[in-house]
Amino acid sequence: LTAYSYCMQHGLFEGSVVTVAAGNVGSGSVVCGVTHCGGKRTLPVTCPYFVSRRADVLLVQESQQLVTSPFTPDTTSELSMKHTPYITVTGTSATVTVGLGTVSGNANDPIHPTANDHFIENIFVVDQNDAVIAMSELSATTSPPSLTFDIPIGTNSMRAYILCNNHGLFQGNVVDVAKTSYTRPECELARCLPDDTGVVGGRCVLFDVIDTDSLVQQLLMHGTSSPFTPDATSELSMKHTPYITVTGTIARVTVGLGTVSGNPADPIHPTTASTDPTLVHYIRFIYVKDQDGVVVAAVSLTPLSALPYLEFEIPAGTTTLTAYSYCMQHGLFEGSVVTVASKNVGSGSVVCGVTHCGGKRTLPVTCPYFVSRRADVLLVQESQQLVTSPFTPDTTKGGGRFLFPVRCSTQLGPMRSTNT
Image (cartoon, rainbow, N blue to C red; front, side, top):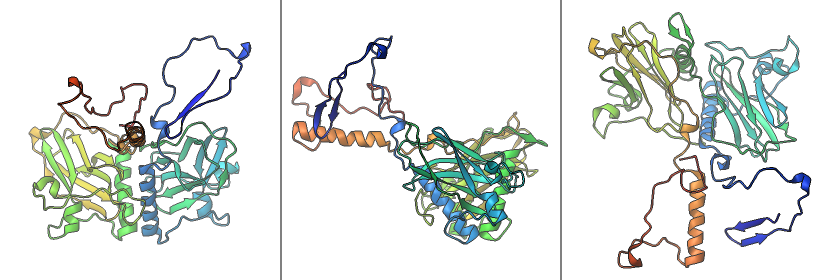
């Protein structure tokens, strides 16, 4: 075997000939096809969702706990031992659990509980460069709270962090890594908020958890246990108030007066992803209650959700709907009660499950492979054709054969990128 490598800057290089012993020869034929390409395994270590959500977590820590840093491990504190995350490494995979009792084997050591009003809502892990390499969103239906992931190639050490909805952000100790997998970090949550179908007493458990958690955060961050009500004289209120639009048997909730008024001067809630906790700004939850105060629909959003909205079929028996939106910066807002005509009521029951989460579908439009490959193409143009720009269409030359741009596709040639 003789290997060749082609560098886009420095050209083609040949390796030494390697003699292959008979015992090392496989039984198959040559497999046509490029074995690696610019797909999701080449995503950058810094995932936009991870970075922005981490900033959001730090904002919660500052607003709730009045400190700007995570709480560090303290073996003399029951609270700390219950909330400290621990990393267990098995081969090339790692698992994060919460509470000393999850790793000590001592039944007297504390483990973090999971209840509707007290649970771990986020776990993330950083490497030696302080880059987030894994993250999981959790809820009060996730018990016990944990995160398992493949240790990305290039990782030398790790530290875990957890966010408790009541007690804030805690960090674990640094864990050295002896062996990694061959995978690279991916912009994908290890676990989204689950599409939980659990029903207790005719109510969706996860929907009630979202309602309870929003009210808990409202009290901790804004000093009131009630949502803010509509105020047509307040820019802040008009920007955060949820509005319900009914079309047939479908209800759609959007946030900000401008989403329904048709007036471009009216405010619409922004979605800002940022590494700065003071700048990250987005709607975390939207949910809707019926005339009996039962949550009939809910959605969990991320800092990369371009337009916050919730759409659902109006369940049978509904007479009124009231929408709620929870902003990570400004709290919980309630919309006006909307009366539902009988002709707009659907025939189905409440569908349990959060309809959107922060998984792969929230990857940025700017695909890292596409960007890098484009720069490579421009380098080829400059090196080969001695110009720095593409040739433009010219119908007077070339005998009528022209190459026109086509849209990005995952089906062109062997480079099968999946991150459109």
